[in-house]
Image (cartoon, rainbow, N blue to C red; front, side, top):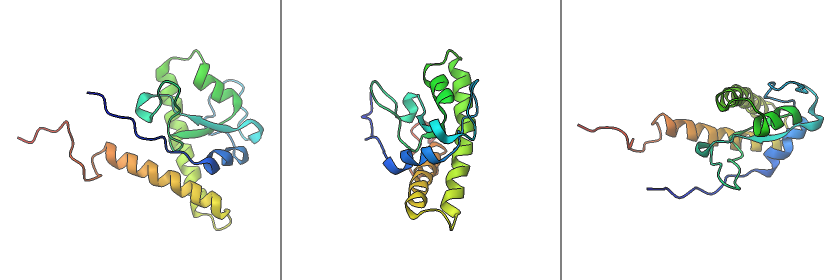
Length: 143
């Protein structure tokens, strides 16, 4: 049985913030690293992340990536497993960046709010995956 997709969770300010930050992928040949001139939000490309035909994943399941890394993630010839691994490592860096922004007294209030928005959703998704959300694990055998 197919489950209906949940509505895409978007945060325009979070996406806009990418232009002020370095690439978190740090993966593709030609990566621009600290040069934020081409940095954009690169969404994870799996169905589990909310991606579908003509749909992007939720904004909290995305990382800041330079043009080279974003292109390699979306159109590169690397095996899917390599892309997933690179995205996972980048997501760890992205969460660290969000935590830094959220904790920084010098961060702009809108930046802090956007970082907290993402962290709240990442935390909720993590809790759900490991069964700490209070829900019933549908795969568990009660007896």
